[in-house]
Length: 92
Ligand SMILES: [Zn+2]
Image 1 (cartoon, protein in one colour):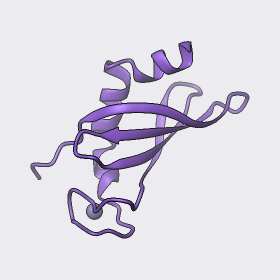
Image 2 (cartoon, helix red, strand yellow):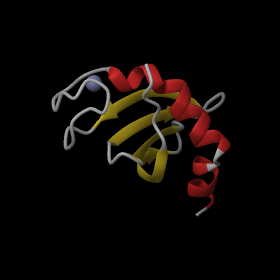
Image 3 (spheres, protein in one colour):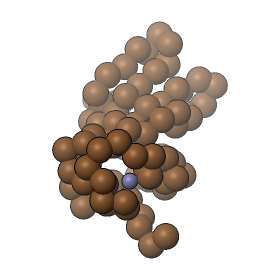
């Protein structure tokens, strides 16, 4: 599989700080938009990725629900952590 998501922008779509639950709105370089869910306790853990069905899936080209993005959990997580998206958003 040659596709690799490239995160272009991230914002907080929702959070429950007490429970450590966060929902991030992620935009990829190819225009794909996703909601990425995190649980921060005991450490930041990506629990779910939902692609918004506004644009076709860049992997399977479906414009309805599919699970392709779930296979890129590691890519999303490493970019969100290494590029310090989460850190910067929470510092705002
Ligand atoms: Zn797909």
